[in-house]
Image (cartoon, rainbow, N blue to C red; front, side, top):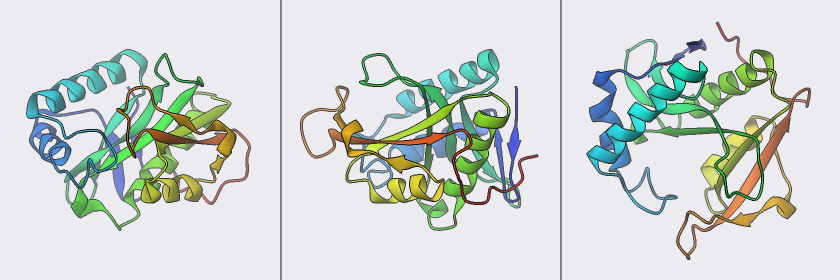
Length: 186
């Protein structure tokens, strides 16, 4: 399984010590503001187990994110095939960090490493990112990655109940497209 590194972060497999901060993060209504609900500890543990299994099986997926300087688990980032039933197909990049990690550029740094891995190691032609239309912070990360948005791709997420979170946007980045400078991945 691959481990990705940036100047400040390591994207790695999941550990038992990640479960408590992962569950706390997913129980935080501010972190989950753009999701239909917060998660229980059991739901969080099940998701981490699934993420770890995918990493072992494929060699890529949703990695745990750790700050190198402190060893602190701060969230996750990675790649995953788009679920069946969506109005598009491909591989999606995503990220979610605990609130104390916001505002330090970690989401963009980790996502850049993932996008670089997708193109240079996995040979993907395109990477997608999807979020609620109102999730401006996540959309800003997408733009910093060099991703572009076409309003014709916007859709109502069938997995989200009716309401303000249902309208979703898709950002795309093609291999070889101009991108802002990418930190070295080791």
